[in-house]
Image (cartoon, rainbow, N blue to C red; front, top):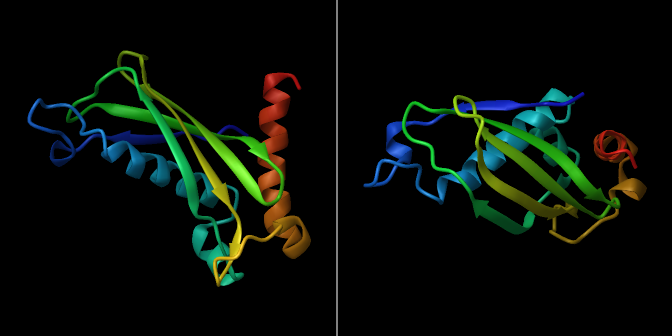
Length: 145
């Protein structure tokens, strides 16, 4: 079940050159990741209520094509690596009009308890583990692994 988040670029998200300021892409990726989690019935609020957080450990973005106010981008997140303690989320970010790749990006995350200590979610919460593992298995299936 592939999920895609569509995002209209607001004028205030652009810089003096009229293109999206590079820092806004971090926010766009998080928006897409949160909507994606909601789509599999695992909103961040539910994860936090269960006693866990999923902090971002690392972020990588390669800027490929600019977008401006009024443009629409589509963001398709996918779990490209997952072991129950850490996961990597890759993102396909496309300009809807031109179909150009806007950015190449990934984020790395870990699972922690409320005291921010890393946990193996497989041992702590089967429901959360299964939700993320199913997404990872879906990615591997799409890649033919």
